[in-house]
Image (cartoon, helix red, strand yellow):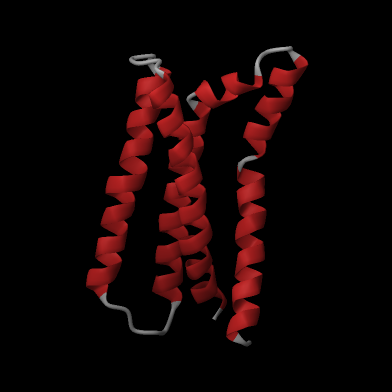
Length: 139
């Protein structure tokens, strides 16, 4: 299979998984609208951080699974750095934000903005590195 074909198929798989994974957020949006609550309240819920943790975790699983299956030789130092960066800058901040929002330690706008930024970063990380992992799986 050609590289472009593999990349296209991997992109479609990852986009489908992203859409399915954000489905709970869409359901919350509909419930919020039906209850005549402000739509922005959704983005203040700790559910956003749960989804971020999920995407960062899935990024690790997909990427490492693809590398493990791939027959191409990879430098373990680069893989180790990538995994460490995902934990330090992805999963750990998402969990901290989840705890802060869930326990209502701080209910400032900045915390909610950071939570939503981390959601976007987690989705982008999953799209980029999850797609790479999927491409390795499809080789």
